[in-house]
Length: 371
Ligand SMILES: Nc1nc2c(ncn2[C@@H]2O[C@H](COP(=O)(O)OP(=O)(O)OP(=O)(O)O)[C@@H](O)[C@H]2O)c(=O)[nH]1
Ligand SMILES: [Mg+2]
Image (cartoon, rainbow, N blue to C red; front, side, top):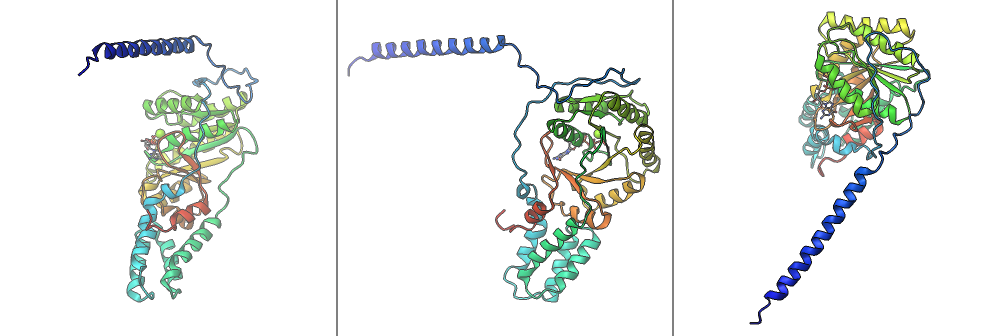
């Protein structure tokens, strides 16, 4: 056997030299990058013409503009997979191979509808329509068209800001996703070229103020904070005043979570709304109630109670990702008469989608067997 050792050594030495050269190149490139001057900040859409000092207690904090990130089209089919399993999937399994809708089958359809978080009235109405059918094949198309009609009968959820600042008050029970949704919304408006300021109206926990600051920074918007334990209505008032003085387009006010059954705290929301009107007569222009989709029918009760305290104009249905209880969208429409405006589809700042009734219904009643 020939002795290959010198060649192997030579080849090994050559490879090491090449490796060293490559490494040197990489280091040189990294140094060059580090020494490059920082990229200029994205131009702000409108410069604040002002100069009014911020109101007392307000701490406006300038934050860098975020990098634009492309967002994939909302995947309604994926987002509704579990809800579709709970409604369409169960109906498919029940009706497969059945020749007619006999009483036994109808009572099973009833059980599925009542168990689907649609709310009693919606379930009753859908069941009554199904009773009029002859063929099991017609059940799914009928439910889809009824659901669509129900959602399309609601007032439009889209509110185009017609004056500035456009004021949005965000309310909801503890942990429903208010602060997260505000971060997501702030980013949306700021990407649309609006100057946004958020207000830390949850003064009950110092951590809540800090949490909103983090979201404001992520979204690249400003924030007005009050002192922990301070009056939330006065933080909201300060934010409106700052927004007017400094020419902001959109103000989004966070509030502390509260049980819908706690009258004292619900009254406080009404006070926030009243105090805002002292600064801007028709504020808030939108009151978004954040409901956690996982709470199912309890979300319907929450909506009914919040509606009594403040002029709720639309719903943000958070945590629709991964829940089987998304049928509650129909219950909210039917029993509360409020449109879902946005849905939360995850915990990151990009995970907010405009609600789209057509896409929602199509995804909900799509064949579930393929999931
Ligand atoms: N998966 C998922 N999680 C969400 C979504 N929205 C919010 N969350 C999570 O829900 C939890 C509560 O969210 P927050 O935004 O703090 O809720 P909040 O209503 O402000 O809570 P309080 O201020 O305590 O009343 C956090 O862990 C969020 O990451 C969503 O759309 N999907
Ligand atoms: Mg919060």
